[in-house]
Image (cartoon, rainbow, N blue to C red; front, side, top):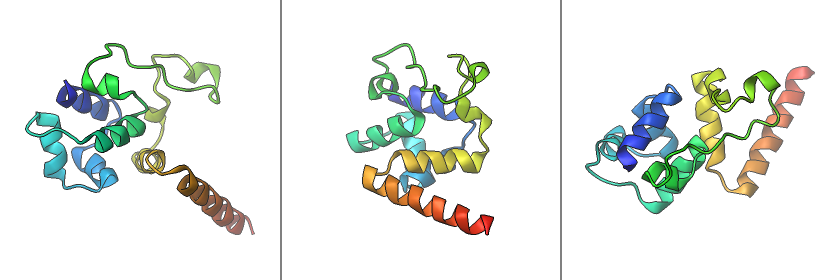
Length: 125
């Protein structure tokens, strides 16, 4: 069931309903309705939520029992265990930034990366 899956993955990331509502650009009550089953997210919103949590829509919909393994190739071997969620090691602000980044179009992602590189270079000066 979508509502149960959304609540589960949100809690795994130690985020509030308000955090996710902010990332999606909706009221907290709207997101709360998704988790309680009073309303269902649109397909577009489900895509965003799947991207945010790095899972499939099938997992959120309850069609897939097992959560897909996270992509952790760039992490050290101690963090690449399927039982360790690397997102959990990020601060709440870092998690929110990552979730916002995941739902951007590819061209916008490139703009964000360019901006971050530019401000990082300014910090080094």
